[in-house]
Every structure is written in structure tokens, then in C-alpha cells.
Length: 289
Image (cartoon, rainbow, N blue to C red):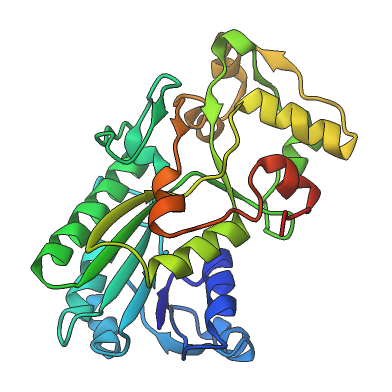
């Protein structure tokens, strides 16, 4: 089992796999080697930006989890292309699971969407993810028995760095008035890791899966809920015009797209049950099983 992009979610995936599989992880940092080894993970040094450094990946794993982000610039993802080139030098893996983003759908004006919705990226970040998806789908049609693309919204968890809105609430960062607000989607990091592991073994040859919980909330309502659960002041609400003047571009980018993701395929094809069906359970740290 090879994990590419062994950050927070990758480590959670590794923790679920360690008892049943030998887990390897690609890392570009020598400093991370002891940490990975302490978790029972075999590190492989290499850098996705340098194709020549990936030679050792050829044929090392039958199953691959690819969670590495694209570069921060451009409309393409050369890192995924390099990974495919390296893995394809020998016998292809039996399954590749890729952690993409729900941002590939673009702004859906608050509509309910499923995996049949055409991609409509509107940001360079989303274009890079679409490029990665296309490359992996093409490889799947040419020889990988199974490729699963996971379209992932906002990942949260109480024990994930920056994984809750607590800091934003403490700063008093404003949110939008109801008339300007957008729908937002979430998945708990533990549920994402569990879904990733199931995707390695279940599903058809080429599959796209929305990996989100059952919450149906606008962004400001999510923040209000967190504030109430943690007994913190609710954030002030401002108009979109005010937000464009006061908030940084990265914050505004998440306020520019509105969609509600359906997850029936996740539940049916992977026979998946959410431990944190809504953000309420997750923000309280109270799984349902």
C-alpha cells in the first residue's frame, strides 16, 4: 500500500491500514522519516516535482492513495503526471484512489448535485484538480483496473490542525448575510479516511464519489452552530459588498461558490456509514458509533 501525500488524512488512512497491510509513504522531507517510521510506515524519499526522484515507486504497491495537492500555480498538475509516469514504468497498481476537491463543480447556485454534474472549474486551484482527474481517468481506461476519484469538500476534525472554525470565531471574522450566503459542505477527517480505505477495495472500474456528510447548511449557519456548541460569540454578518472590501481573497474564494452535494453513491457503492453524519456530531466529538 502506497500513500502519496501523507499529511493529516494520509496518516489517518495509514492508521486504518497498518494492521492488515504493509504501508509505504512518499515523502520529500528527510525530517519526516522518523515520524513515519514511528507510525509503522515505510518512508520512500522522493519529490513529485522531480520525476527522476520517483524511480523507486515503480512496482512497489498494488494499491495507491494519492492525496498530494497540486502546485500552487498554473492550470495543470504536473505532480500527478509525474506520479503516473513513475508508477506506469512497471506493472500498474490494481487500484488508485485520488483525493480531489468539490471545487471542480464550480458555483452551482445552491443546487443539489451528484456525481453526474459536469465539472465547471472557476479558479486555478480547481482547474489543477480537473487536470489531475483527467489524467488519472485516462490512465484508468488504459490499464489500471480501478480508479476512484473522491470529490472532497471542507475537511474538519477537532484533532486536525486548523480543522475547526474556532480560530475564526475567536477573531470575530464576519460571515455573510443570509441573502448573500452560500451553501457549504463538510466531511469529518476520520470519515474521509474510512471512505478512502473502502474505495481501495470496492466499486467499479472508474468511479467518481462525492465524499461529504449529510449536513445541509449555509456557511454562516455553520459558524453560528459552532459558536453555539462551544458557547462562543456568533460572528457578525455583513453584506457581500462589505466582504469584498474587508476579507482576504482566499476567504472570499470560499464564499463565491454555493452547492449542496448528494452522497448516495458513497453510501450505496461503498456501503459506507458515516460516523459523523452531520457537523453537529463532529464539532462535539460525538460519533454515532
